[in-house]
Image (cartoon, rainbow, N blue to C red; front, side):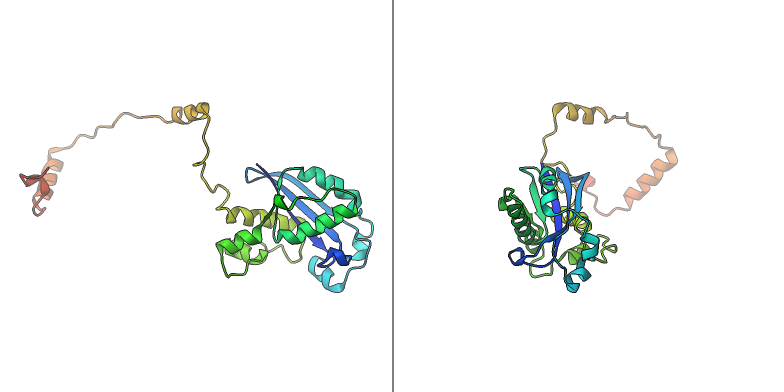
Length: 229
């Protein structure tokens, strides 16, 4: 099972009003385990950024001015996520909305929303009525987010991987209980178990007398009752 945990940073909240993606980061999971494959790109939005937005992710117009546009990186991103991998994001509708708007503008097919897994929804089910932003969930699960002084797509994706796995019950939520092992693996498991012969420990007369003395002190023992079954 292949999943892509991803995050985006943007110039604002609404692509229909001209806001753009400026940073995208993604991490590959296979069977809920990170493989080490990652994707990250800074993107030139070809527009200005407000001071409020820069304070969030720290990406300035000057820094982004020589970076590729979304149209120039979109095919690399699509190649990385593949055509059928599930896409995991925190507040997935927001990120998917931006991605699909940018993909449409670049002349690419939009992503199916049925591929999206929203960790906000998962977190609300686990912690109903509680705050479920990424920082709060990191605190709940004791995940170190001390490096998160600014938002960054790849850093947030890395934290989200850990949060996502915790929301599912941890890195090995089923402890292999729901997986049928091949017969050769079962043979290997049982062959590795060695049964050792019982060890005999001789009991001295002194130890026997001490044991009998201890038994005499027990009140109304079962082994002295005639009706004991």
